[in-house]
View 1 (cartoon, rainbow, N blue to C red):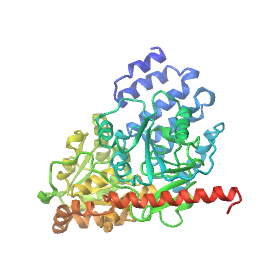
View 2: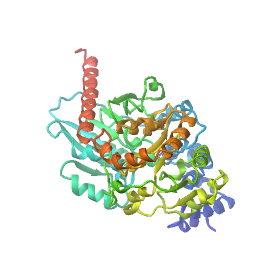
View 3: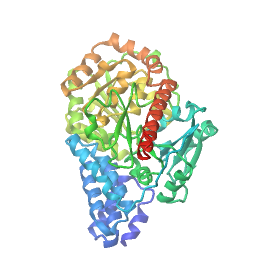
View 4: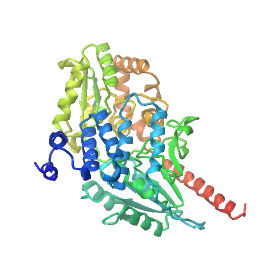
Length: 493
């Protein structure tokens, strides 16, 4: 088999099928000039089938091959490496920070744009994303597009995604196209797209992606196309990029002292740094809920987030609640991933009658399937964000474990803002205890299921007007900081 023909064979294949072909290609020898691409592709595919540690090894190989990988691809591979590290339970906060801080080394020849002070009647805010319809932040961007103060701000949405747009992004354009200016990257390269943002005169650029989606938005932000740049909402750690001035957090996700884990200055919103909006309104009403007999625990998170340690905790919970079952549903329809998770659960001690492992049944059924669950169990150290909000909206209480770093505290923040912070646990023992206690209190379960949707709607988690006003106050704060810095440089202050 010719090496390059192997790539042709992979078209339309599942990640497991791609890996079979990639293994065959590797056995036959990798051409010198293809090593970077090969290692990156195999690393990405391994991560997608939840072989995280091996995927990280290959992504690191891609980063280290030197001249046989293009700098753009090398940066993408390193962003993939950083993303994958969040799935591991044995990586310390400091190790993650140090790995992120190395990211700036991949931009030795990038010359940032220069900026001078400009007084504005209206501030121009740019939001930078990658295929916003396909990412979790699609649930969190509606207030940014629909509820901002039009007397004070202009909003531009920049999308670096070059592929086909799906129905959701077209729906966004239909609903919010008159409220924001929408710019696609199209055929322009990274530097040209950064220049376009610069020429648009954006004052504050908010990167919604960080190192997700190969970190392409960060490669744009590295040119400093706006004088003030912020990362947040779609990413959950420092970017490690000096061109990013601030990181958006909140008082729950970012306790005092967390600054040492960031290259950016941390901005804390007084409530939640996320504001949730349902994409597809469910047809089922949680007011009809009745406690299942036996109790059903559930996780609808990406299977890659489910560590062996998490499976062990879940097994302890199931064993402590007689007859209870665990429902695991993946956002992917890949049956290989379902089989792999099923085998991992068996190895963790689950019996066949204690678990139900499923693939995605499609977006139209996803929300309604929460009605099959009594309690949602969050993952750790990479918790849910959108899935936690989805569960609460469907009346399903979520038990979440949190740590020190921003990205491990999403569940704690969401639950606290929703008024049920008691369901967040700071230790594994407490996590098990809270899940078991809730399962054994059928009256409390019924009350929560019947009232959680209303609680969430009336909380900062879904209060778009309050959220955008709080966010705009931060924009004014960072813009005033920039004004003061410019005046200082001119000797005017």
